[in-house]
Amino acid sequence: AKSMGHNMCFVYQSSMADNIDAYLTLGGGLRKAIEEEQFILHYQPKIRLPDETVVGAEALIRWIHPELGMISPDQFIPLAEESGLILPLGEWVIRRACRQLQEWRKAGYPDIKLSVNLSSRQFMQADLVDMVEKVLEETGVDSKYFELELTESMLMVDAQQSIEKLHSFRKLGLTLSIDDFGTGYSSLAYLKKFPIQTLKIDRSFIHDLGLDSDNDAIVKATIAMANSLNLKVIAEGVENRAQVDVLNKYHCQEVQGYLFSKPLNSGDFLVYLDSHRAV
Ligand code: C2E
Ligand code: CA
Ligand code: CA
Ligand code: CA
Image (cartoon, rainbow, N blue to C red):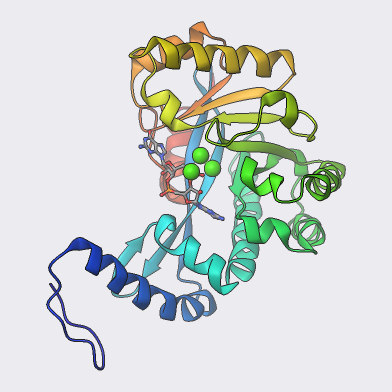
C-alpha cells in the first residue's frame, strides 16, 4: 500500500492496482528519463556449443529510476511504444550498443558480437535503416559484429516491406535474428523468404526440454530444419545442464541463459569475459 501525488491517495489492496499505479507514474516519467539518460544496457553472454566459449551478448535495457530503482523493460517498453518515445529510446540503445562494441574491441575482445532488440514501432519507422547506418559510421563499428533481434509478428505486419527492409540491413553488413521463435504462427519455410541468419528458440520450449517428449521433438525438428536452411540456432532461457545436454545432442549452435550468466552491467560483463577467456 502506498499513497501518491496530488489527488491520488488510496490504500491499494491488490498487486494489480499497484501495477496500474506504477504504470501511470512511469508513463509520466519516461520523457524526462530519456532527456536525463536514466537508462543503462545490461549484457547477457551468448555461449557457443559444444565448447562453451563466449561469442557474443544480447543488450537488454534497464531504467534506473531515481526513486523506484531498476525497472525492467517489460514494464516500460510498452509505454514507450504507445507514446512513440521508443524512437529516441531505440536510437539511444543502438548508439550505446555500438559504443560498447568499441569498448570491448579496445579491451582486447574484438570478436564479440552484440545484438539489440527492436520493437515493432521502431521497425516500422521509415528512416530506421538510415539511422542504423549513421550510428555504425559515427561509432566506427564493423557491422558484422552487430545483430538485430526481430520478432515474427513484427515482420508479418507488412511482409513485403519487411523483406525489403531486411535486405537493406543486410547491405549494411549486419546480421538478423528471429527472436522468440515458435511463439508466432509462421513456418520456418515461410520465414526463409526473409533474409535472416539466426533463429532464437523461445525460452518456453527450452524450459521443458528433457521433460516432455513432444516438446523435445519440436525443438529437435526446429534445429534440424533451421540448420538445413543454413540458419544458426540459439536457445534462450537455458537454466540447467540437462537442457544443454539435449541441445548438444540436437546440434544447437549457441545458448544463452541463467545457467551461464544473468544479464550483466558493462563492468561485470568485462569481468566475465576476462574469466572466461578462450585459451
Ligand atoms: P527478450 O528479448 O526475449 O529477452 C530475454 C529475456 O529473458 C530478458 O529479460 C532476460 O533477462 C531474460 N532471461 C535471460 N536468461 C534467462 C533464463 O535463463 N531464464 C529466464 N526465465 N529468463 C531469462 P529482460 O531483460 O527483462 O527483457 C524482457 C524483454 O524486454 C526482452 O525479451 C525484450 O523483448 C524487451 N527488451 C529488452 N531490452 C530491449 C531494448 O533495448 N529494446 C526493445 N525494443 N526491447 C527490449
Ligand atoms: Ca531478444
Ligand atoms: Ca527472446
Ligand atoms: Ca520475449
